[in-house]
Image (cartoon, rainbow, N blue to C red):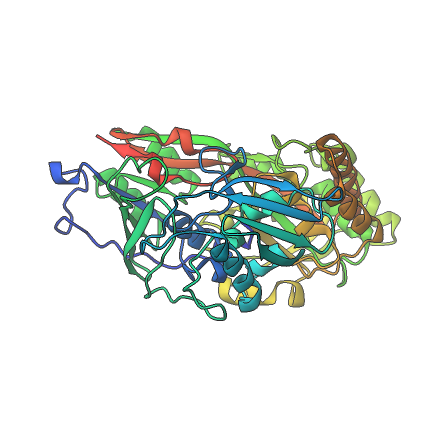
Length: 518
């Protein structure tokens, strides 16, 4: 999810608004509340219309209302959802066909069919929203219907992983009544086929969902869901401790999590996650246009210190862009630069290129977008890089609105994070290393482009993963990005909440419809 450059998730403020209870009254109180799940988040919503968002907070809401042809409804394993089957109909993976599920209705009672699928993909491309969600469909040449219950996707070039693209935010299906050229505003009805209907939405405050009675699949395990947005994780922490909310997902500081683990009546859940943090180096701007500086940084980077000192072990050092645990991952940076900082090698890389030490560099980070721990994170990075006089680091920061606008245009090195569009090694490689990377950091490599093209055309998983191993080795050698940690998926819930653990996995989707409370 994509660059979710936020995936990454761009977050605004849900104010605590009690619903169905007086202000301050526990969300757990009263038999009438037993079927209502109240959850907290620090994520924000930009647009609910799936053609207009590419951030994690928006995806979380959209994913409750809309569905894709393929998806991850139960686990990190790709499965048909609104399709019954999607398959390549050409030998080169350039043409894909999906047979559609019958008997599915939208929230307004209209019937789902192939016209809705074609309309949904066409409108994402036509609207071409600045969020960047359309980039996921960059290889789509055309979509055509094959009768009422089948569609064919014609691609510009072979892509063996097209079914994974169908499972992204760009693949949500809306009814044909939606405008093909403009977004549905957040105040308009949101009509999907998902397990919930959106009953009320208050921008920067809360979203209220009801279980959809005519849902084609298993009914939600709660009658209704309230998502409340908090400006500060500390406020959300108090809310879950006091029973004002039943659970919370996204995002607590390490100190807050440590406190919540000791609290009575609460449980902190962890599951395999695929969120990562990385440092982007602009290879077209000084000083990182010099590969010696980039490699010196890779030798000296203090991954373990950040994981231990700042995050108290809640994150793990990462030595390649794809997280450890995903098929195809290799510890490419560890193989080339070592698992621990090698300050002597870093100095040799600099002095061997005729550069004096401590070598001055400037690193940019953003204070709140990636959590309140970012300040401590970059203070620790500065400390580690300055050890033994290798670098002299100047830290600079600004809030997300200005930060995200500047990135590749003004910054030489900058912090970013990533939530997956889909849990596959491809999603951590192709967007970052192809010549048209959204990072706009000047990285261009003919060899890399050829490897990526070959990976997309690979006809077997073993061949595909072999190519991705080559890609990761080349990425470590070129060091245009320094990956440095990956984190598990973490949620906090009161003891009477059931089903949380079962929804925490590498897909990084919180499936609220699978959660209940007693």
